[in-house]
Image (cartoon, rainbow over all chains, first blue to last red; front, side, top):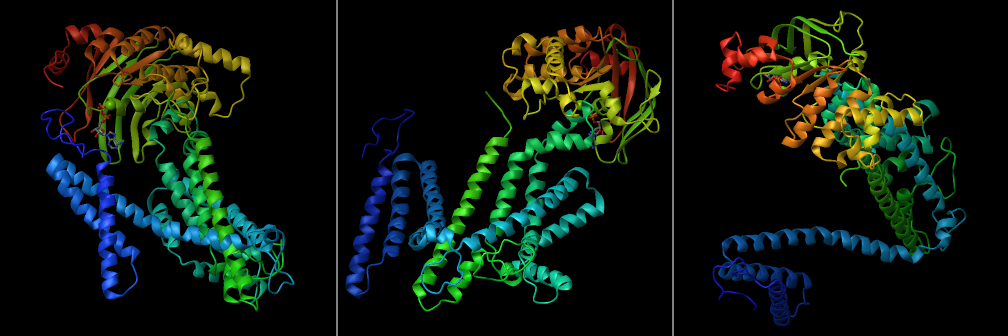
Length: 356
Length: 259
Ligand SMILES: Nc1ncnc2c1ncn2[C@@H]1O[C@H](COP(=O)(O)OP(=O)(O)O)[C@@H](O)[C@H]1O
Ligand SMILES: [Mg+2]
């Protein structure tokens, strides 16, 4: 080990070589693998990968702390311990995510083909068919929900931050908080009973689905916009007032541009949040095998509901239904990812131009 | 351009808290008036009443009169927005708009009000204002760079350029140099000297030398203790305040005995 114990009283004294922790980690894992395979041979059980990793990491923690305390002192040892713990927590958090994405990609790519994006499920039993009706339905309903919620949410946030004082503002904040916690099925039932008043029971239409999504989306938009507006420094508002700019123009021309990046990100995330909603759409938009682009009549399919119904009502050719469900899930994830990317691009585009 | 300010029996409140009590003073046009006094005595509060910026704070209000060439700022039906177009303000910390270029910052008073301005008029206004703020030569080659990309002292002069671009009658400055280095401070002091040809200038400062260098008249504010309102103790020619003040507290303050 390339440590410099023999060189006292220099700034670089007593440091582990940068590669040392990796060597220790490798040795720990190898040792753990040996121990675990011995145990599995003795007990006749299968070799456990999870056990190996857990034991190896534990061994690494103990060894690196002891080693570091000997050579580098206790401050560095604590640092190494915490670094290892934090990194471990990060890896544990990443595991399900990576596993989920890889499962969806592997199973979803089976039917991720041109037919999937050009055909609906009309007159299709068994193989073939596609989800274009569901994709169009999702985009229509989420788009309409966004068109409803963005102005309402943004204006509410502006009211709360720039104008709201006293009991009314507190009441709105309270109800927005309550709305954030509404289960999505309740939003669906709300939209259903609302539209049943006008169109009679049994109503199913895309617009009702959009309404349910808007109910879920508005509080998220209010919250994120509110936060973004609050971080705009008061100095900028005052600077604008001092130039003789009225309040509404100050909000329009100073506050909103300054916070535009954050607001755009918040809105995109709100859309991403509702685009995967299944329960409310199942109730008010129903499910169908055919394309429907009319928001105001008939059932409208959406991607999450497509995934759900493909899985729930598997036909004769079970595998075809499952493959389509996974391809639908993959499409949904890709749309959400695209929205996130878009949010980043927008944020970069609007970001205040600082520095040289 | 440049108007006379007359303040009569002004009380300033933050909700129930009376921050400034019973101030009366006369500020002549084309002069520099300095406000000095210990921290918390209400200098900022008072100066912000001169362009109705005080009421931007929730619950804040004013009693009394502020007359600008005889018109009461707090009279019924007076639009604070129009007041602020006549009485500009420069703040303690330079605060250029971060989303705007240097050029747009100068034009902010026009652009933020969604007023149209021809390119040639805009160019002329930008050059005139930046020259007025002694900044033109330093930034003329990078007018399209972000307003935050120049040094703190330059940013403060940019804020001054932005304030004079709306052609006010009066310019209020609340400790405009306290966040700046000595060289930038000197640049701003020179600028104040020039601006006084055209504007009525009121400046809050913690720096006695600065007050004595730049101002014609000086107002000394003081406070009896925390929780008490600030008061105007003495208001006179700067020369007299610094050499022969009539109140003991003023003498103690300017000679550095407290504060
Ligand atoms: N936004 C505010 N709300 C309530 N009180 C305030 C506010 N700003 C200042 N004050 C109070 O008003 C008094 C005067 O403050 P200020 O005008 O800032 O003093 P100075 O500028 O002379 O240091 C202080 O007691 C301060 O605590
Ligand atoms: Mg102050």
